[in-house]
Length: 289
Ligand SMILES: Nc1ncnc2c1ncn2[C@@H]1O[C@H](COP(=O)(O)OP(=O)(O)O)[C@@H](O)[C@H]1O
Ligand SMILES: N[C@@H](CCOP(=O)(O)O)C(=O)O
Image (cartoon, rainbow, N blue to C red; front, side, top):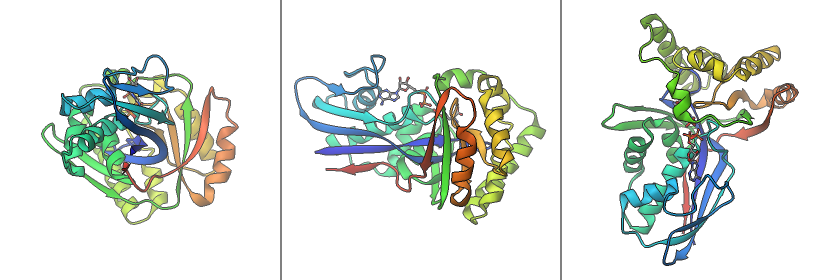
């Protein structure tokens, strides 16, 4: 049976707005059970997620190949919707792969990235969902490029807020322009973040993650828990707290050595959401036949 498994992603990592992302060990899984006379996607994600060809996964697949033979599909997902963990990206990637497999398109990862980024608009979620690991990507409205690198022994202490925040709503509060001085500070922090990850200097990378002025500054009123979590992490000498994607999820990246202590500290906070201690997914989408 065709199975498509796509990881969740945590985008931005602070100053890497619309460019940097991480694949996490939380998955959307599709099991394609076989052809039938209409499209059906069984799931338990709630009534707001369509179970027919209006589902984002199927819309994506049918946009690539409109006359695909309808299938019965079972979908399970641990990725919460509209929380800043890339649920829409994982759905788009799954849809592209569904068309790729059923229509024998022979798409490369690069091809999938180009299709996905046009649909999602920015590459920082779709690229790690395809490639896995730590991904640095760029998109100029024409083509996307992405470089993936492994990160070892890092945990993502993940606070998933109870309420949804649609990416579109969280992008609506961003300004059209930002001051040059802010952009220089933030893009230079992002450059150092990437260099530090590639050299294995994770303490430096974690500090850089807290130096964003591209988006967190403007989104902070939507996510008051970000400051609270960051302050609590600092109390145990842990840096690397950022708004995951467009929020409201907040991630604290931490070395394996400090993960347990930091997690105990953070889960003690009085916040109305749930906590997960997640690993980084080394591999992106996994397809089995
Ligand atoms: N597995 C899925 N199947 C169908 N639609 C999905 C799925 N996952 C996410 N979506 C759609 O994507 C929306 C969330 O997208 P978005 O606001 O970008 O949040 P996120 O940060 O989770 O990507 C959901 O409200 C839903 O419409
Ligand atoms: N760079 C984007 C990332 C959106 O990620 P999502 O997981 O919230 O969809 C942004 O910050 O808007």
